[in-house]
Length: 73
View 1 (spheres, one colour):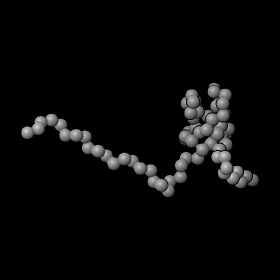
View 2 (cartoon, one colour):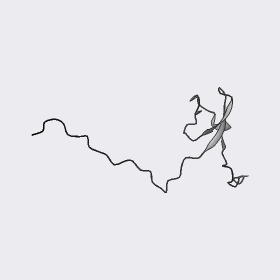
View 3 (cartoon, rainbow, N blue to C red):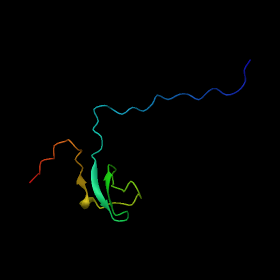
View 4 (cartoon, rainbow, N blue to C red):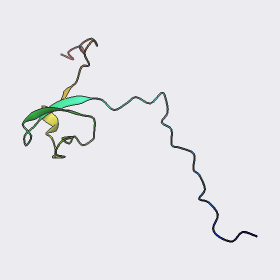
């Protein structure tokens, strides 16, 4: 006869939906690091120092080889 606790219940891993779009990749200038950084968080924060970034200075990031986005104007 075994005494003791049962092993923990295993939860199924959380899988993202394949049709969900990944967050938009943007680039902006960090005023503290003085570097151009890539950001995908909301609200935008520098991935190096975690300082908040100005939303107005953010611009879409175009991956090399992808066509440039059309100008909305």
